[in-house]
Amino acid sequence: MTASPDRPDTFGTPYPGLAGASVLSLMEHPPEAVAALLTSAEWLARTPRAAWPRLLEAKMIALIFERPSTRTRVSFEVGITHLGGHALVLAGRDMQMGRGETIEDTAKVLSRMVDAIVLRTGPHETLEELDRHASVPVINSLSYAHHPCQALADALTLRQRFGALDGLRVAYVGDGNNCCASLMIVGALTGMEVVAACPAGYTPDPEIVAWCNATGAGTGGSAWVTDDPAAAAAGARAIYTDTWISMGDEDDADRRRRDLGPYRVDDALVAAAAADAVVLHCLPAHHGEEITYEVLHGPRSAVWDQAENRIYAQAALLGHLLA
Ligand code: CP
Ligand code: NVA
Image (tube, rainbow, N blue to C red; front, side, top):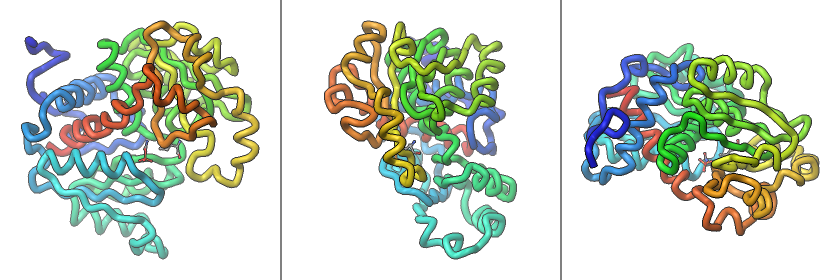
């Protein structure tokens, strides 16, 4: 295949504004930065990992987990290793941070030792504080408010399936949580229309929806909210859902299952979408809750590509931040 600006035959030149930057939500970066990341990620996805450039040679990256993870941990480690770097996986509870060392002191110490810090935590403010005091890039690998690494993999998956993202309609169905917010943000940055179908009390932050529409004025993207899953699904090229009980919501599980019950992604909802629609889920899934087993494992499911794409999206991100 012939190379083109959208489909180069190299990783590409790191986007200048990303060099040394942090990524807390993606809202702090322009559409051009996200486009450059997705172009590099797509190249990594179609290039044998043994042939990847050693962009992270001699780079040390701390991955701190204050919450459980399967995909994020494995995909970061795999991507970093194939780019020639080294990942230090740290459980927050085993660090002095877990027994009271401040975020400020932790940021200053780690900045003397590693080239980037990836943190999965609860409050988004913890990431902001870490970033304020760190002199190396900080990457959000999930907070209660945002999941930008997931959103990059989501956009990559849609780009692989449909080519251009602009004008693509995506329906998010269920809890307007971190994955919903980050999907709306990446949608606004790449020109997608993202409609979230959520019951009252579970809608995404209106300030984020407003930011998406303001940003979308320049990209063609938009974001809106409804309480009707079928209305959201009509004409959608992707139906996306996520758990009803995010990490931190466990005490509220019964009420959430009751309120979100009508928002299950099943065959009937998928049939209401476009004929070529795919189904996305950030995983882990809860069969029979937010998604049926049949849809998750069925022919329209793109979730396994989506999970694999975490490797390429995050490797591209680190390549642009640190190369
Ligand atoms: N989607 C996602 O972030 O998965 P993990 O919690 O397994 O990392
Ligand atoms: N919304 C979920 C995503 C898990 C990857 C959570 O925050 O637990």
